[in-house]
Image 1: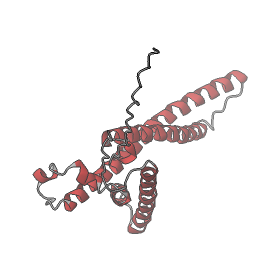
Image 2: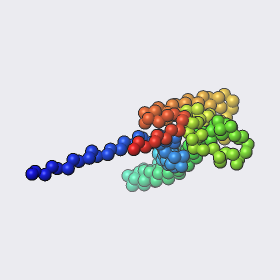
Image 3: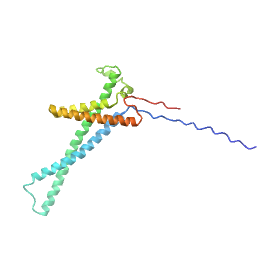
Length: 212
């Protein structure tokens, strides 16, 4: 009598629904702050080195215009000194610009996160003046406030601090505020669009349960 092969039970398949995080760009605040400050420093270093090197070269030419060399050896040493002068001036200006840009980028992201927590505190019905209650605001409350509104507030706040730092007159401060509004709105809408493309709900923390 032929043996009947045992029937194989169908494999149990589990489908895991994607987890929807409330973090901006699917990164924590510490990750976004670190990445943004490093990127800001590198951009400032490159732009500052290029600009500072050109200014240093022009300054070297102006300072030595009355004693130009007359021989080939003299011209060689002249250009060698000029290149060294440009490199030193460019590196100095690049580090200064990079540090400055990284600091202001950090201010922007800190303002954005602070606006999220501030709005979450108001949504939760807690008083802003009580620091103990600020720590009680949950991640779900903060997730409901993570949208372009906080980014616009961060852009306006950073532009206002920049105007105060440089003591801009009122017309210049108004133009700076308009620029901060445009940058904050554009960057905030871009973050929201990327979140929607990833299946996240903008301004709402939703953790989908795992299906068994």
